[in-house]
Image (cartoon, rainbow over the protein chains, first blue to last red):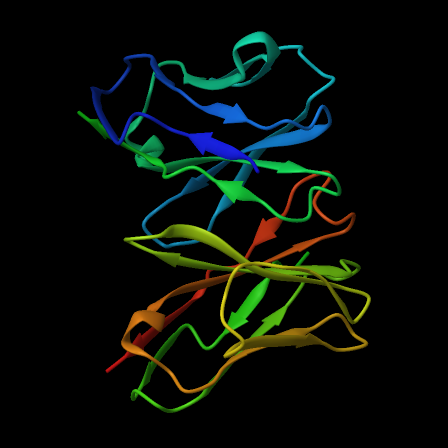
Length: 114
Length: 113
């Protein structure tokens, strides 16, 4: 069995603040994949990043960065200098084996205001 | 490049009826997965199809079924609709069964009255 925990239900920040969204993934498998998705009000899930369990390198893409620490089972997502357009629900997800079945966390709603 | 297309976008059905939702994956993607999203249960995996065969199934009753055609388009069917089936149904496609990530469609919002 696997479990994805996003303890933060809702976060509100003012534009230009940095914000970190937490995710903890628990599984007994040694090979697994981790994902972050963004869901704007339109409903579509937008793919942000994928990591596999053997790749602990941090990744930066523009204002987004991800920190994966296998020792603590955490895969956290930081938005630097947040913008109003970042307002959305963010989901962390994990998958073992073939990666074809995603287990999602409950999501973190991020509200960025002016 | 066209994304994942789901039709219809919105649907209202009466309890006891059946419904069919359609998903056209990105061209070249042979893997299609379906998810149900509700406020109470969140995002839950329904099933995955690859090369016209169901490869994975979530924990849903037999009223939920699906299929995939030779052109990779997929349909899901829900029979004997219940009020609790009201949800956003999301379809996702992948070229490699999710290893590099899934691309999701905008979903079909089903309301059962």
